Image (cartoon, rainbow, N blue to C red; front, side, top):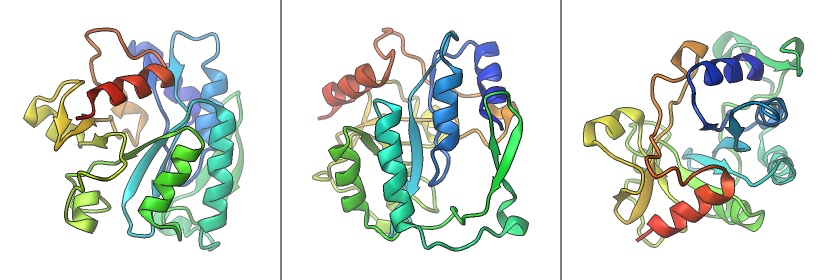
Length: 220
């Protein structure tokens, strides 16, 4: 799943806009943004965070500079333990040519020592979008960990799993308890890319700014 291979598959599947949201790390999202320059694909800088409550939270940003600020915050709240490659596999680093240049030994498949509300506040302070991930899943989701969807919360949207999106026949612009609802491919292998995607029939969402505006207009 090097960024280079991901983008090659994305172009082949004729997708227009993606984000790479690795768990508690941003380097390959940055790399994909750089690689996409001059390609018929736009990449929104992003990351998937795990709050202290073990809620997965998607964060999207307007530029690489904001994502680097997020990286510093992640580093501040990681427990500082070493990755167990026998459990989680090797966390490989790639370069712009798709070559492996190193292994990340930091344990990232864990919760950050910061609560969900504070994490969302930080994302908003650096102009990002905060979206609880796959809230219908029975693990690491808003509903599984907290038990409810607070309608007063400052979420920019909520994400449904791709399975619920298909089952409920959601479309862009639909809401879940007043929050705009989106879904992602949640691809963990190159072969998964393009099997699921959201259709923007109005051709409104072209980049981070138009995504943020669209979600703001859709929020009830």
